Each structure stands twice: as C-alpha cells, then as structure tokens.
Image 1 (cartoon, rainbow, N blue to C red):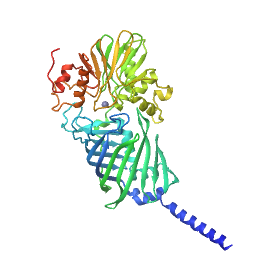
Image 2: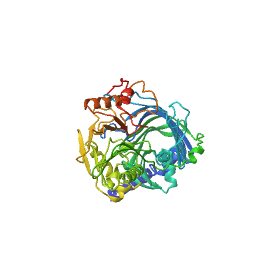
Image 3: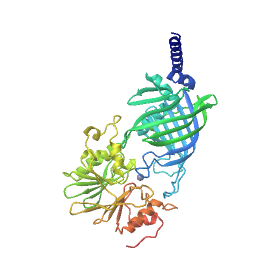
Image 4: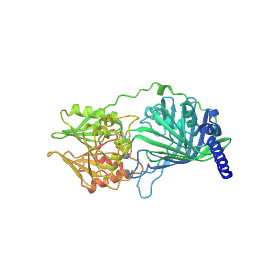
Length: 491
Ligand SMILES: [Zn+2]
C-alpha cells in the first residue's frame, strides 16, 4: 500500500515537472525569451561564407563558396522590408582553375511586393553609381528571409495562428503564410533552433530551405544566435558568425519610384539565321540554337525558366513549321542554363546531356511542385534522356550535330559544346562570352576561355562562327584568340 502510494506520488511529481517543462520550449516562452513582441526592427552583422545557389561546379558538388568579409542584414518587421548588404569574394577551390576573383558588394532589398538590387545599371561600368535594379522574381525568397529570422518567425507564427506540437526537447511550431508552410523548432532554452520552409525554383521545384540557429547569447541586451547557417536545395547558401546585433534600429526602406513603376517586359525572342536551317535564338540575356533537321528540330539550350522556353518553342515552331522538337541539348546543369528544360520534356523532346547530369535531373524533377506547378507537373510525362561521356553525334542522315565535353574546364565538370561540321559553327556558353563592341580583352585571360580554345585545337575543329549563348554577337575564332591574348591566325 505504502509502496503503491509512493509510486503514485512519484508519478504525480513527474507529471508536475513534465507539465512545468512544457512551459519551456513553447511559442509563448520563446517569444518572451527573445523579446519578439517588442522587436519592431533588427540589424545584425557578421562575417562568414556565402554560396552561389544553382551554380555548383559539378552536379555532385555543393554550391560554390565565397568568403564574406562583411554582412549586414537590416529588417523592418512592420513594413515588412529588409536590406542585406555584403562584401564577398569567390573562393577558388584547390585544383579548379577559375578567373581571378573580384570583390562583389551586392545590396539586396525587399519591401512588401517589391524587390530590387542597388547596382550599376546593366551595361554600365562596374564602378558606375549604383541605382535600383528591379528584381521582381526575388520577392519570394527575400520575404522568406524576413519570416525565417528568429524574431520574424515568432511574429509570423503569432500572426498566422500557428499550431504547436511537442518535439524533442521543445516543440515544433507550424504555420502557413500564403502558399508557404513554415515549421520551426523551439528548444528547451526557448530559442528558435531551426526553421524550415520551401521556395519555388524552376529546376528543383519546391526547394527545401532550412535555417539553423545556434550559439545563442546576449548581444547588448538582445538574445540572438551567434551562428546562422542556411541550406537551400540540400547545401549551404549562407554561414554567418554574428558579431553584433541592434534592437529596433531605424530601418527606413522606401520603394524607389523606378521600382514601383517597373513592369517586367514580355519575353522577347529573336531569330538570327546563321546558316541554312541554323538559327541563333536570342532576344534576352540567354540564347539558344535551333537546327532544322529533315523531319524534326534540335534545340540547343533551355535557359532560365518555363516562360523563356515557352516563348522560344513558339518562335522556333513558327520559323520551322510542322516539325516536332525531338532533342534538347543541354550545355550544363547551372540553373540559369537548365531552368527551362522541363518545358521541353513536356513538349516531348529527349534531353541530351552529359551522363553525370542525368541522375541530378531525375532526382530534382521528382520533387513536388506545389508552389508553382509547371507544364510538366501538370502533364506528368516521364523525361527521356540520351546521355554520353565523350563525343556524341545527332544526325538526320544529312546534317551532323557533334556534341563534345569541354574537357578540364573549371567552370563545370559536365560541360559541353556543340559543333556543326558542315556549317563550321560552334555553340558554347560560360566558357567564352564575346565582349560588347570594341571592349578590350581582359587583362588576365579567363582560364575558362583558354581551356575552350585548347579543346577546339585538340579536337581540330574548324570554327568559323562562335555562337556564344551569352553575349551580344556571333564571334570568330580570332575574337576568341584576342580574348585570351593570343595573336590572330590568318586562316
Ligand atoms: Zn554556367
């Protein structure tokens, strides 16, 4: 009997302490511990690393790193608005030849439904005065950055009827804001330890974002993490060691009139004939090539997005009527060159890509696409691939289209160029972009361009036109020679 009573008493005591412990690790406790209710704005600064999302040097490597010597985020939770400024420089990985890193000082701003960068105008000199450059497509990501800060998460949770459930040493707090679901873990110290959400990306679909907050301490009266690590698509995009925090600074971010008045232009596609049946598909920052084969069309490159692909496909079919697009040749996996691939899969084209890229695309394209369902998400078609690791030829019996890995190029390890032997046309991207007008060649030759030239020489390709898929114009082999500081040849 006594033993029984003792057990009951112990059990009640245990329940009591469990109930007491439940007061910790909750949304209310974290809001109080972090002083979130009184935090109308915050500024935090530090140093660390930034990583270039979508630009991995190989489909099996993480996003490439930049050293960040200065980082300042200024957030106004009431607007909501935020400005992130950093000074960064690319880290050149051992054994990888890259152009000499140049210091970058990006300034990225969001306010409500507007986003812009402060940067020299397009085409101006790099040291020209910065002016607001609209970045409509960045609103989603930059808004996410506001509501995934520790204080922002707690505020948004309170404003969006968050639900909580016990998890580990604390609780998981969830809410949705528009299309986006946020889940944060609050630990036994009443700290926001981790926030997870998803953002849309043309390649990865619903892209997981996770921000880990650790090393919380007192910064001049503000409880704030000493380390912030954000991963996006499975790899870090930011790793900051915080050195200072200011509570409720003045963060006044006015939307510039030019940004407010800006409307994105319609996608522009221009066809430039390079040879019979060969078209340079331009009109924006990223180009493609369309080749009219006997009973089908081959398109080289599907850059950027579904919007770009849809416009290119329409124009190509108008120029080359009554033939299907049978093949889409992909230069490399960088997102600005692969964001439009899925539209071609939906169109019924086979994706022709280096063998290293296939598993990457298969995995990426299997991810859910609830935030921004594209054509392929709706049709559910299975992608078809044709892969290679060495020279690969597409032919209709008349015209050969040769595809070659650009061997040993530091830009990417699964990187290809396309050569038309009859027309002597080379299509490539990111190895060489001809400069506009009479701009002088770079003082130090780009190792990417030097390597491209070495590959052309080694393969003995007779190149008369270089259709660079970035850049203002068709170039010649002598242009490339001049660009890398070599004398022109007279052939
Ligand atoms: Zn690239």
